[in-house]
Image (cartoon, rainbow, N blue to C red; front, side):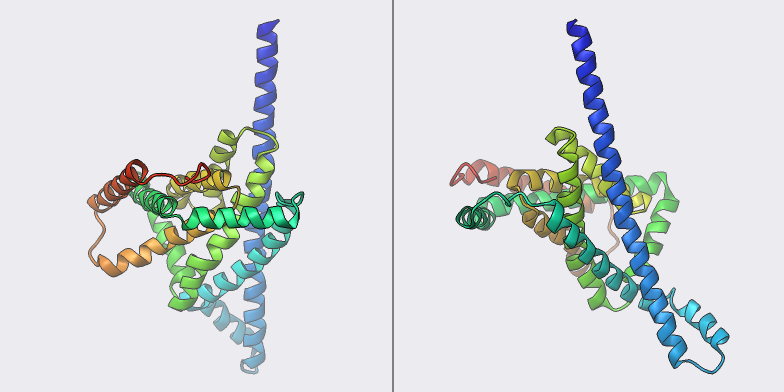
Length: 300
């Protein structure tokens, strides 16, 4: 009888994982569809404006515009606008689906927010989060080296995609990569998806499954692998702080790293660079954890 109960319990857990992962995947597909629809709307709008300003021959104008729309200058603008559209829809869903504070009074909500702000501004917590983010970036670089060695075509596809999406206006590209994408993706994955997964599986499963779904969300093999360490950190952070605010900060910092290292390191990045990044970040994390005391139990 005990074996039958254990087997039944295991089947229920597996069913919960499958159902939760399936619903999470549907959300990811929906978010990707939003990106595609947003891009399509932008392209149609660009073509209509181009035809309105073009010569008398609409056919020739359309052909010329079709060639221009694939250039980095135009694609960067399209990426920016499509993420704005996607982010707005995600925000509306987030407001409906993710209301962990709906049962709190105004005073309780204010106390919770103040507690979160104090924790994030605390030196120990801040250093731990920054060190963990830098370490994760080092891990991601190491993973990218491994994926590039095993699958050279994946690296080429990634570079082509990123060059097209961010190779235009550098200010717009920066705003897209460092500001808009982290906000939209955290509301989507650490907000909506994690909230959904938590109904069907324990927190360990939630963190792991959302990380896999976050890899799928990026739509290319290279990023699917190297975002996993970041996604695991973001999933744990969302659970630990019961908020996506620190996740947004971590995500922004992570996406800022390539810009930062491009300024201080102009040579080609070899495998020793991520090793050194990982070593320094691990040392800072350990020293902070060991020698800077906690001020209260709520801190990291």
